[in-house]
Amino acid sequence: MIAFPLRTVFSILVAASLLVIVVWVSPPSPFSASSVSSSSVGRLDIWSIRRLVEWRPCKWWLEGHLTALPAETNGYIRVDCYGGLNQMRRDFCDGVGIARLLNATLVLPKFEVAAYWNESSGFADVFDVDYFIEKMNGFVKVVKELPADIASLEPFRVDCSKRKGQFDYVESVLPSLLEHHFISITPAMSQRRDRYPLHAKAALCQGCYSALRLTGALESKGFELLEAIPKPFLSLHLRFEPDMVAYSQCEYSGLSRHSMEAIDAARGDRKPWTGELARVWRNRGKCPLTPKETSFVLQALSIPTNTNIYLASGDGLMEIEGLTSVYTNVYTKSALLSGEDFTSMHGNTKAALDYYVSINSDSYVATYFGNMDKMVAAMRAVNGLYKTLFLSRRAFAQFTAEGLTGTELKKALWEAHQHDFSHGIGSALPDCFCEFNL
Ligand SMILES: *[C@@H]1O[C@H](CO)[C@@H](O)[C@H](O)[C@H]1NC(C)=O
Ligand SMILES: *[C@@H]1O[C@H](CO)[C@@H](O)[C@H](O)[C@H]1NC(C)=O
Image (cartoon, protein in one colour):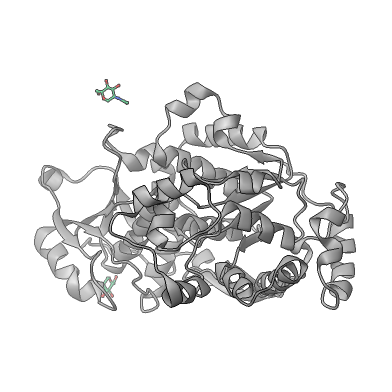
């Protein structure tokens, strides 16, 4: 492992004792970036706030598989996963729980891969297969190869992804499994697992947060990248690409003509909301923060402008000068890795690098609450890293709608986020994590 220059015990003690007294009674302006020295000792930023709650892996998961695996398998399940890396992983995690629930045997999942990338197995290219199988021992049966009698068959496809609301996998999927012996499933989105028996939930948790390790090749590339970033550093997952802005149906003013054109080109039929609807939409926190707004919120959280920031973002980020004109120590993988390395990478492996850096960074800030953010927050919690924060788009929209600006706006943003941070709100982790009062 890497020894991080984490904040010293001294600064934590000073910060904790001073902050409890000071921060709650006075505006944050004394600590705003401009008045903070460049020294890393005694910096009073959002991370210095005393936390009251944290989310930790639940006992029933860590204690392991209390229920013995069934002697007989009900059949073989392949999980078919689509979308970005972290969406595929989320669906796969669900599938692990479902396989256990159905007393089935898991075969390696199918990860959708971009057409230009002709790898046969997306999963084995990103995750360490042998490690996965070893770590799942006792939680669920996993095989690399199908038994000879079904090896030549295509699985019977059961697509649950469009199912809405509650439905029961035992009721709706088990009959197909028993009939066909080999099925492929794409799990339903947002299916609640609270009715799963604990052994099925434990399989999901183990599969998702303990058994998935990047391949050796990816991990060493990630390590190389991590080593190249000056420490300590904040990993920032900033989302402001044309397609996601278009998808949000939000209107922005003050963007460059270039950005506006890119957004318009990505809009298609999806026209932005206007008038009252736009206002309501924005106040519900539906609009992505621009890099400039992100930079403002970071300053409101007293994160010094000389902080080393790793930009855990895909290609096509717009308006990045809004951040880099204020936060001057911003690093990207394209700048830190050699050109040849970089051109040989595709979407999934780039996403895997951002993930790797983000679960190992000193702190992690997300401007969005997407699959990657949820996965990173969970893995950080598994590793005992709690400097994790989701910026509140809703707070930003509401305060600005109320007409707050400058120092007042910063003060309000500070209070909203320090409340979230100390109470573990926004980083609430589902299923495998239990609330722990500090
Ligand atoms: C799975 O096996 C257990 C016993 O090992 C049994 O109690 C349970 O009903 C089985 N579930 C299914 C869906 O077959
Ligand atoms: C795609 O597959 C072909 C044949 O296996 C191989 O020669 C080629 O190098 C592969 N392309 C990439 C980009 O990996």
